[in-house]
Each structure stands twice: as structure tokens, then as C-alpha cells.
Image 1 (cartoon, helix red, strand yellow):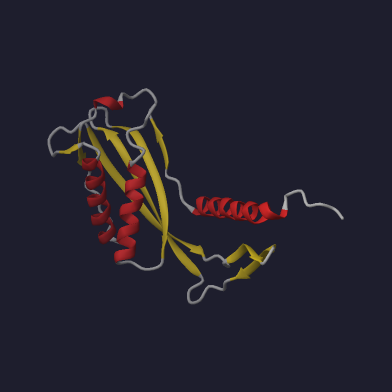
Image 2 (cartoon, rainbow, N blue to C red; image 1 turned 30 degrees about the horizontal axis):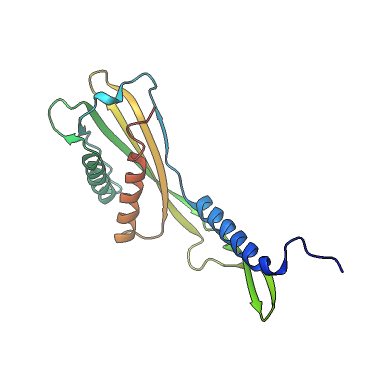
Length: 189
């Protein structure tokens, strides 16, 4: 009889750890990571106060209001002061809503179990069919930090999130996305 590489008593423990690792990697792979770029020669340590550049978007004034408030809240929480007079930096933003096809919902599942002195493992798949609309919406937010003395872009961050409806869910996702973008400002050289 051929002996398994992993002793039977450790098989359940090994498979449980493997499943947790795979699940963690899948979850991490689904999260969006904010992107940013900045002027590598700029001294960000001097920045203390900011102002918001007036942004208008007649197509979605609710999102404009939310993003303005979320930017202000995030920067004040980081210790910056909002001012209307001679700020150290100005903040502008833009956003775009795109349609994207919904995924088929293909899932792969792994499981383990034991019965008496024996154990086992299984692998399964399922396919979810999207109901209703065959597309979802993606909101892309871009935040620009500008040196007002030189009228020069010094930092830009972008991120996106999926949504199907407006209201509280979209407001919460907007706030979360703005916060994640601005967590990377100022850059840590």
C-alpha cells in the first residue's frame, strides 16, 4: 500500500489551511487598489492648508457634493486645514461612470470533512447567471493635488468602485473610495 505524503491525521489540518489561503487570495484579488503618481522632486512636507477648486458636473451633482465633502473630511482627518485664502495646495477632482458587463459568477469551492477516523476533501463549481440588467456601473474617481503658486500638478490619485444603484450604497462607496485614494497622499518617499 502506498502511504500518503501527508499523514491522515494532518490531512484535515493541511486542507483547512490551504482553503483559507486560497480564499484569502481570491478576496484580495477582487479588491481595487488606488493608483497614484507624483512629482518626485516636490517637497510635500511643507503642505499644511488646502482649498477645493470648484468642480461642476451637471450630469451628477449629488456625486460632486459627496466627493467634495469626502475630500474635505479625509484631508482634515489627516491634519490639513481647509482655507479660502492662499492655501499651500489646491484640490481638484473628476469622475466618470462607465458600464461594464456583469460577470457570469463562476465560483470554485473547496471543502473538507471528517467522519469517524476518516477524512476527505472535495472541490465544486457553480455558475451564477446575472438577473436583470446584463451590465453594472463603475465609478472612477480621480483626485488632483495642485501647487497653486506654480499652477502645477504635483500628485494624482485614482480608484474605482462598482455599483448598481445610487443612494446610501453609492454614497458609502464614494466615501470609501475617496478615503482610500487620499490615504496615499502625501506620498511617503
